[in-house]
Every structure is written in structure tokens, then in C-alpha cells.
Length: 325
Image 1 (tube, helix red, strand yellow):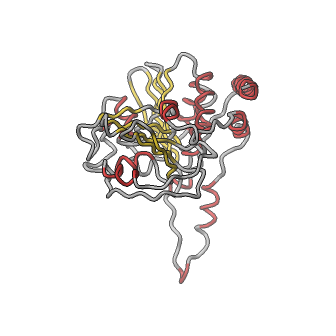
Image 2 (tube, rainbow, N blue to C red):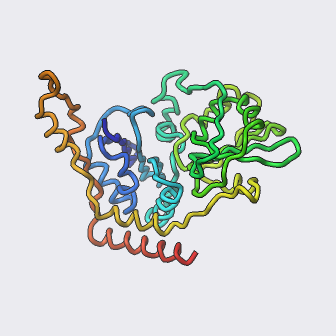
Image 3 (cartoon, rainbow, N blue to C red):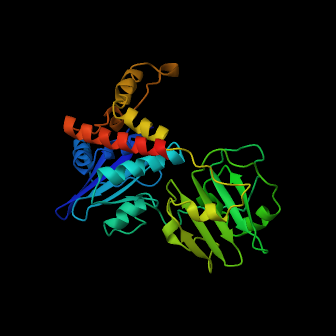
């Protein structure tokens, strides 16, 4: 139970790992004020000597002061929320190379020279038998799948699965797509997309979430195919879609305001709630047991008044620009 996060700080050639049991949904909030505040935040949480794996780690950040590189990942509530976070970090981490860690923990360990498989057991990437269900009702899909047909035209479908799951189906998915009915046009941006071009034997993929394993190409079944991984850039696929199946472009102003609202919202004290829950007897006299780490609250970013004012100025400028656009 929990939303586990791992933080890594690199400075003067050494690195330390930190852990918070409840911080995965706070990673962006902790990073927004900039490198000095984020580093203080991480060091205020518990130092550990182990790595979380890709199953249990739901958010992470690595701050490399020596090379001025920030790597981070966390789940965003929407495409707009992800883009809003990227826009703020680009302003509040000036001179830094700010990267979303699409390969999850693999990007962090790779950055430290430890390879990408440290947190993953051999054969961890799961493949599936190709399957496809065209949802002809849902206009807010998780991802968009598009296919280049032999005549050069492109068809697209909304899907309730993640882009990497479609890749895990292997090329056999393509035959199922060809026979599939159309899905309705989108009313909101998806979290990602994948495009198949059988004639070029090419796969293109983008996402505003982690797609762990994407750098282990070719993934099973895709030998002799090339991958064009686009990070969180959807524009290449957008340019391929037909006029009757466009990507919507939600405004970022509302997402930027949500980030500002989060600055004044402290994290909930889940530890105190669980401590009270353990005092209640379970069924037939059983006693609830809670892992000790879950009782430790997250120590959030604590910017000084000047640091907070600078962040709010940045947010106000970005909101004003988004409203004009």
C-alpha cells in the first residue's frame, strides 16, 4: 500500500538514494520550485541503500548537480497536466537538461552507469497473444493506434490500452486492426500513441507516461523492424492522422492553475490515519499490520518565501501565455 517514490541526488561525484512511501503523486510538486528546493526536499526524507523496482516505484527523480541533469517520472492525470509540468520545469530549472524518464527506473540506473536491468529480472517484459477490441463508444481513449495501409492511407483507432501493450502484442496485431471497425473521433488527448507502417517495417511510439523497456528494442516479435521513439512528442503521429480523426489540443491554462493550487496543499498524513486504523481489531480478533515505512509521512518541498514567490511568478506568466494561445 502506498505511492512509493525514490529520489537520487548526485553531487561531487557521489550519489545517495532517498525514499518516501507516499510521494509518487508529489514528485512534480517537489520538483517545481527548482533544484535547490528539490534537493532539500529529497534529503529531508529517509536515506536508503536499495533500489525500488519498476513494479513498486510509482514516481522517481534523479538530480545530478555535477552534470546539471534532471531525470523524473510520475503519472500525470492528463496530457495537459504532463505538458504543464514540463513547461514549468523548463523555467524553474534554467541551464539544466530536464528529461522525462520514459524507461522508468531503467533511465535512472542507466544514468549512473549501472545498466537498465538492475531493477528488472531476466525476461521481465511480458508479451501477449495479439488481441483487439474496437471500442466504438469511448471518445477518451488511453492511446491512439494508427496503421499505414498498402495504398498509403492511414487509419486510426482509440484504445483503452497503453501504447507499449500494443507493441507487446507483436506484429500479429496489425491483421486484427485491418479488420476492425472505426472508433469515434477523440474528445480529449490520449496518454500516448503508436503507429505501424508494415511496408517500411517501422513502429513509431510516443507517450506522456513511462514505457518501461522501450530502449530494449527490438522487443520480442519485432526483429527486423525499426523503432522511432518520439518521447512525449505526438506531432509526428498527428501529422499522419486523417482530417476526420484529429488530436484535440486542450488548453494548458487549467492544468497550470492546478499546479499552482497544489503549492498550498500539504500532503495528507496517511501515516496518522493508518496508525489509528491499526488500533481497531480486525475480524475474529485479528490485528491489522502496517509496514513501518507507511507510518512515516512525506516531507514535502518547503521553499522559502522568495523561492515560492519566484515560482508563482513563473506560473502566472505561463498561465497568461496559455490564455492568449
